[in-house]
Image (cartoon, rainbow, N blue to C red; front, side, top):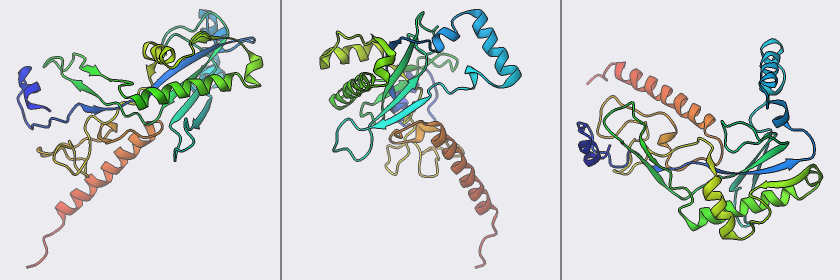
Length: 273
């Protein structure tokens, strides 16, 4: 890591790699919530009895709400016509909550999340102390650039437009979040800053690259050290325009092949003189 930061916490410096922990990128989601005229998953999982029934149904028959993905509908869209590829992903979920992990709302509703796919903003992760059990200091630095702000606000407006189109319009009784009174760019941006959440796609903090500042090389070896490689989404120079699970698996599979290649090359007899 960065030598001065390590020394400040009494950690011996093995390699001065100032970029470790920098270049943090993540997919931020703004979660719009719409109240519905008919029952949603909120109504099925609110009580302890409902949760027990659903758990039993899954345990015995592998059926019911627990067989569903968190989001049932996805959509990739462009916020501007001149873009080569989509810059926004929508997730529609048949339930709603203040944030993931909390209890569902006490009314029928669904969530339409707006996720910005290619953020320009960069954050960082740093040490809190030398204790590896302490959580690190995380500065996501979301929405730090004008482009990121404009893209997310445009996505929120697109999500609203979809909700106002049939057949969704007929199923919706009220926009709960952000709420109909918020219309201007600054109002929607302020709401997004206060209410958006991560989709848990952190990447970039051990950036791969040919330059001296990069943390790992093309074979995922940490520069300046022997016997240490990194194989997860932290090696991405730029975040992918979608979920990170499959790319993470690909990175691991690629490294496994490279390690096997290196072992085979090391075991090969030297060419005759």
